Length: 167
Image (cartoon, rainbow, N blue to C red; front, side, top):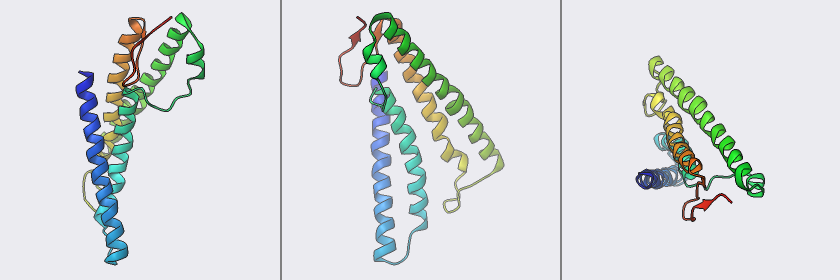
């Protein structure tokens, strides 16, 4: 199941990035070559960048390739390392659940009920903000998988790495 989620997220990030590059390229061409800047591509690029950052961050977390200061976890062994990994995972899961899912869904609900729309595209702004709870749900999914590994006494592995048992 993780492989399927990874694949979907990977292709979503690739597609969003390709569209983002096309929008920015068109924006530059229309502004400097045709002397008529495109308002639509500017807005599309802004919103796609937000989705790209959040989905990419969730994917990177799931691949265990996110930026981390891991000096302490690497220095610890055995039960101390396992306990620290549980604490870190709990903090990440708490943030994803409270801030991203609950807070993000609250933001989406408020903006959809207020009828706020984007200036140029006239899209409901709540759909733009939906990237926040979506990424939070994906991060919680990965947290559950990592918790399963920790519960079995294994450190969750980075994508492409071999599973590391606790010493």
